[in-house]
Length: 114
Length: 116
Image 1 (tube, rainbow over the protein chains, first blue to last red):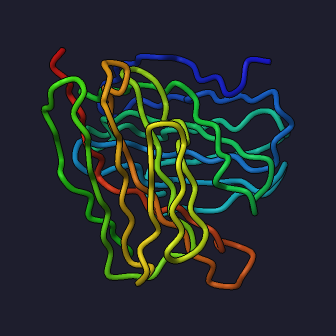
Image 2 (tube, rainbow over the protein chains, first blue to last red):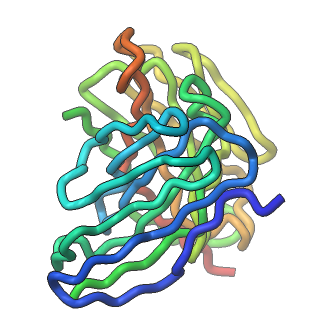
């Protein structure tokens, strides 16, 4: 049981490049979410999903796309990277939308956009 | 949007000292959560509080849900080196609709450093 896994752990992009941050969980959790963590700002919700095929925007969705084709995977796509997207990205999952307090976080992806 | 003010932003203490940190908001929350983040890792839930006035312990950690529902406190007694990390508070509300009903709002974090 690996929990929540994220790849890559580190990534450097040039402005305008696109990439996908991968997130997978093996706990059969319905609810998955993406956060970004910036110094002095805590974690902010980017997008979330309450189940396969269902996604919605969080607090800071601009510049990011998500999809949820399977229960296990919830990739985050940066369409055209900008320096403002330099951050640490965390994926999280929980059993259901109504039990968010037992969220399990992945180890994070540290992204730098030059 | 809703914001949480967490203080202090950082603490430098001696091993064995007690630690206190808090979160305040202008908004009312129905749940308060406290997480710890170790370097290079994601946050891990320490304590969850569900009722105003509730006091809950987890080993040397004790957290309280403020009576006004706008604040919460975390205390760590007799700190040890493995307590080093960043502590986050998070508040959750229930606006009563399904989509977007439950969103966690996180504080900025308290970075705890311990001198042995």
